[in-house]
Image (tube, rainbow, N blue to C red):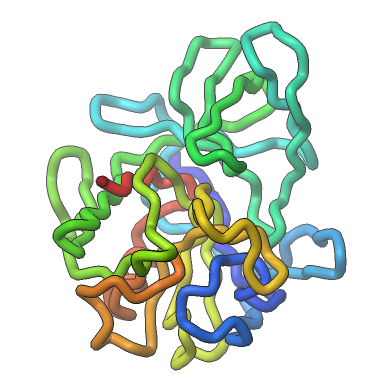
Length: 261
């Protein structure tokens, strides 16, 4: 059976949540109508959802696959260690109206160690398996900063590759292991964020806030394709609109993303 993880379209201004990568912090991205309405968010940030494709499956993860944990309820407790003290509570859906997901790093039956979408990048915690629904994906995305290139793998097989733009010297794209946290579709397809933007679980190491948001990283399209293949952003990864549209159609929320140093 296949899960129905949610892809979302944000109703809030995109630049208020993601690091401003397109140059103008005033670029807006408002939601377009989609299939069904997601749960309401604090501070009046409504969102609509559309079904995800077939990249994630509700089956045990095989060799080369990654497990994705989707929060069942409206919040989840994260622990510092198995059967240890509660470390924090994280709400679901997130600020975009997307069901909260985590990338599973270790599955120990009743307990799961997960990668968390918080600062500092690479933070991990433990959640109870009963609080989440598990799915799996064989896809992963690798970003080679030095070569200005991305590659999408399905297991060990490369299925798509293309050029990227990365962060400028003063606002670099940080290396590390991340995952997709939401998918937003700007109404203005000709704007700085292009056709789609996948939010990442990581944050800029330089920008602690940007345009009122937390400096979250993203992989997104662009209205300046000539800048692809250079260091041009505030930390996000820009790819062509054709490439981000392919990702939007094929990759699930929770898909792992590795940015190589």
